[in-house]
Image 1: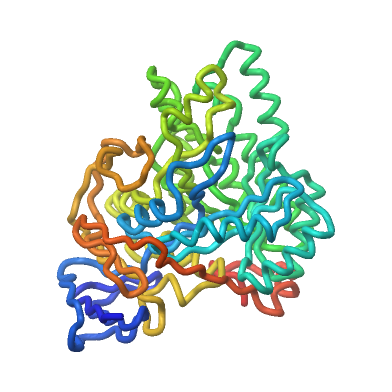
Image 2: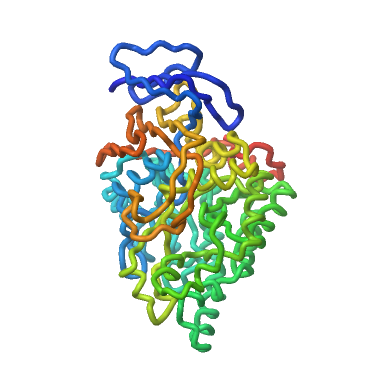
Length: 480
């Protein structure tokens, strides 16, 4: 494997920024310093006037997901390739077993699908039912397969929704194993009821989607999951926090010393609920995802959460369906497949709306786009930092480069872009994955099947004991 020397840039890690050259060899960073010499045959990248960042990590994607009677447009190859074009070099996707299905059986299915990945990937495991066999397989997944996080859907009644009994059993087992429980926080019983009420009132279009999933529904579920985690003494990670109610629930819990972490989607930071009232059904339906986009006031609360450290990571919930698939809900919004794209645009959107606006520093940007995820899910410093010994997953970031985001120019296979027409300033000029230049000034050089499955070890033996004590959270990483 050839070497790459990135010269003249400013290295930005979550803790500091400094001028330095970066040398990679055989897929690892081997030197970070001044005036590094290029070995024979090395590729040299001039990063003058640019930043050198750790490759982005998207902790929430759904590639090749079978959902609501169809399958997402992006598979593990096209999705990871699009991610690399946007500076993201690792994804954490989700294995979602059917109720009553073996977790290990589902895991092997997803591993097979992911063999075509162009970038590194890992998995969260969803718990969709409970039995003694589930309890045992959780142990196998943690100890042998490197899965240290378990997802719980509190929504999607009559499908994959977890009841409180399942939450309690799974959270308790996660604590025993040194794994992190995560939750999709929406009260599925209330959503089911409100969907029926919308139908009874004759509201069948996409505008009914946010009406059936108001912020209070998310806030209630977040509070309930946090309370269960508090009683059991286990840390908890709340995915796609979209509203003031859920953000405040996390902030309150953290203020009393509970280990609670929050994830925000790029879309929820910049897109508001007016999209559901678009006169064109296809456009409005394209934005149907859960939780839905919110009124603008919620966006400021999410930014404040990221700035204060009460929200920790940014993701996309990348789950692409085309117009023909979304049309399944033409006469009933509850049948519109839920999902939007964004894995390709996340970093540029957050840089433009966050760093360029003064909301975030470059180091804070690195924290919320890669380092915090690596720490929370126990792959730091292999991922998430520019340092000797870390994986050679890097992004040369041009702060003055610009791009207008559009479905016409995206690499993702979806036929819609929720950021359509948005011009962003700050884009990747080069992406390095596993020590290979995979994106160079618009030229995507993704290779099918070279992505590696990244095992994430359980947290240390003191994990359970440390969580049982009410310790204030200073770092964002769980104690190992």
